[in-house]
Length: 519
Image 1 (tube, rainbow, N blue to C red):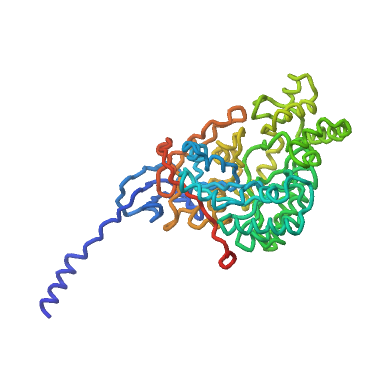
Image 2 (spheres, rainbow, N blue to C red; image 1 turned 30 degrees about the vertical axis):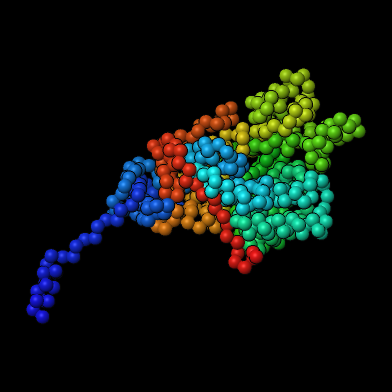
């Protein structure tokens, strides 16, 4: 007893030995941390393997590597919910699969298959990353357009009962293979030929399996049903389909609807107050990006696809109707000088410039260009007031709608920070970060992404608040952004001191369908 007591006293007098600090792979030290859900603070982020192990004011760890983030902003990796980067992410060229334009902005996750273009073969799309490593994470939609073309083709008609059943089956199978949900591009032919009920039937298949309905709505302007009615339609599809509804790149496009942002916001607010899940994304540019055909050709002229469209150009009986349709669409877009061609023979020239060079009026010049191909165009059609009003809504997240020839590929997130957060103070820095990361992750169920917290995947960005900005312009759309210092993807440093490391640590993110809904 005495020996035991003495030993105990000795232990008390000496004190318990302090445990050795935990060893981690990477420590980001001393930056101003925005977690995605809390007020910022100066502190440390510790990473081990592909996960964050601690976030706090001081991490009591030893680290294989320490990154000094003093004076920098530390945030969750940004998530882009609307892109057209599927070609890059599945390319044979490893350099393209790194997606430098995104990493240089801090985008660590992107969605593909938007606007109804997502392949029904989702397992193949997601499985590509195993054989072809990628620089960022990606999730994929199954596209209404791809499904409809596979079964119905490009005709303006209602599917038969058998065809509708085939389309529903394709959507169901895609969801079971890991699709995020169903995407549509109802503005674009042949998707525009579908009635609302047809879309609801397919959306319901995605909803049963826990998916989201994402839509480039039927009309962002005054082409067909009008902006307000198109918003009502996407809300109705979400409600009838029993799934969250998400509006792609929300905007008021063209002279007829500029200034309607408050009315559109009010419509969505009514649905949200009723308990319906309705969200949107937005790119921070006054010019949209599409094709010359989509901008100017009446929908009836696109029935049957490009070969039939070209035949209609040569039909004298249709000349007057075609011309009046093009003239009206030019008016909605603000005129020929508001359409900048960004591909092909007339790259970096407005339609007005091309018309002058050809000695023709804009209508005939447009037809002449389309005979050669269907080039991408940048269309200057939005007001800054509308852009800001949409951006300030707590349910609107950052996106790029990344597609060739537009500076939004290389600069959307950086521009939103530099122009709308830092310079104009339209939104706060915390709002910019959370609506570029946590809001997107939470809305689409990306478990373990979009937040800096212990146990989350280590997708982390460090940027200089004084210099982070876009360099891309409409004239030079491929200039990389500046000011991003460090980007970590799944625990691997992909951007180091502003320089790409060449490491491809991204992953394909398969959505898990609702249990019991897949055989």
